[in-house]
Length: 325
Length: 306
Image 1 (cartoon, rainbow over the protein chains, first blue to last red):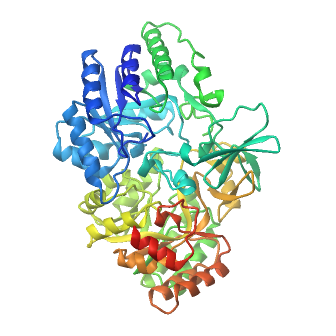
Image 2: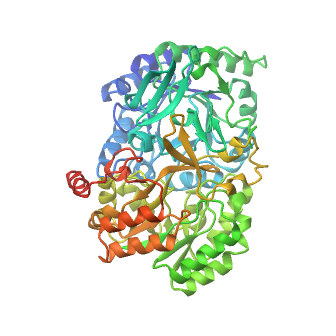
Image 3: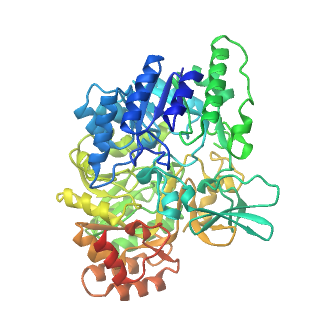
């Protein structure tokens, strides 16, 4: 299984390459990629140089052009595709059907990966992308259990890639407008979710209150770890009960699931976090490289190595073990 | 400007569901009606018995009947059910997930608001493969709507015009989670909330509405003040999404504004009396979707400036 690592900057990409990534994914510094955060991402020349560096080390670079193109400005997405191809990208990761159509027509030789934002959650949807646009790999939404992933792999003529560590969407990716409802900024259009620019913290009766736009997302007692106020991981109330109605402030760690994912035929493992710092990337990549070596050698996989790096200090295997089904 | 009644998104009691459509057939000035369970396949068997009668009554009253697909399907039985629906040539299918497109090929079809069409080139792609009507995702601003509708004069571009805005879909059932039940043994607790379960913040701000695997806005979308602007932008249909209120009266209000029999201000005031949930239209102005731009003149200035 390939280890696919995030890079928000050229130096993070170098760290990921050095730490043992098989491939690195990254994006241009504009609205075409789904981690469009200030100070992150690659200029055109940085992309070309970084791809050259990675290729020297035998590491692939996958360029994420995975927001939905803005109406009236589709050319921005087209030129991102053109420039990724020119820079020597090993694949482009795309979510928008119109952009996929452009890739298939304009650059038929370019390897196309279906972004998790394209919400390909079943074999029929995957076949649509394979048949229409010659997609070679699909990044599966984080809503599937391991048996479901195995079943999909048997049914489609396409590689599958799954997330193993980092942020966890509980809604189907690419089909969630919660962030734009609260802030006007959405993953699909702006490449951001619950953006820091719209977050406020305030003290209130000894509690720390986190707000997103005009809404309270959570309140923490003194001494309680305050998780980042991602909208779907807030505390809310209803007439029938209150608490973390959608998901706890937790993140994905599928270390213990690696053998099952391998048996399910998964061909690539993805680490979330292009917005993360270099030290984080280096440590996560190195740890998963060790885990994969242990897996290949038939040795026990070290767990709990990464606990301190996880959001809110708690982790879950997400949908892979579908305890909630 | 035409009017489409979207599918009932909530788990209504089967007889109420049937009677709702019977009344729509008999009394509502609506052009097109989307029927079928699109949110959760577990609910589908309950309305299945009433589907033929509902479809027949709607068709007999001259309404176009469109069958909506599920939004998210992972189980084999869900995929088989959609393949069966797609194979039925007697009705137009509204596709709410791309997996249905392979099943219908290039046959004429509609596309619902759950398929990601954010720009004119994606819309053109779908239109070239048989999409005759496209209901755009609710989060699109007026600028995008105008660009898409302007580029596709031969496709009926529809905009979400009334009802709680659908915001997210998950494989996990939040009603079941709240009631400490598994999805497979959910006891259909969502039927307790036929208008969605209000989700409030810890400061008691109304925020969202829970509907099983789906999450919607607490606020009710209203584009009554923007009907003129939407028509000028090339929008040819508005989608009204069923809520627990007098939907026939809601449909008549929108129809009256379209026909010039009521001013937007009159209709907006009347809407508050019909459905007491606060209204929102922020998505159209590229503002938070929860907000409402309520000054008509300001709204028009903003729209022109965009």
